[in-house]
Length: 116
Image 1 (spheres, helix red, strand yellow):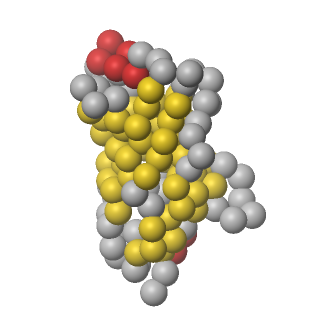
Image 2 (cartoon, one colour):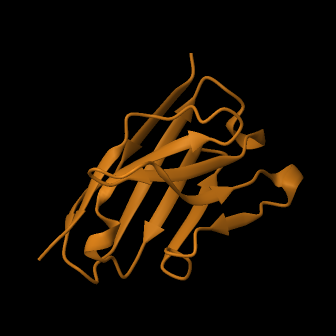
């Protein structure tokens, strides 16, 4: 069955960095567009970044509030999606989910807390 398992979250100080991972299984990851989304306490789910597959030229896109700070990448040989997050601020505090673009199927998420 389809599985997405996020990891790498934690507590980090403002200005710090974290790298999230998402292990995928049960579907053709290499030919699937994937995205990261997040949900802060009391706020709706919001899009963070998308990674398209090789047939779509491996294009990546970012929300304006993370562009230049976050980098989405993928290792198709390992069926893994990544999100490198730099220059974190308290506004980045949220549960981060990886999801398939086609149907928004997502994992259970990993908590990221940015606080001093």
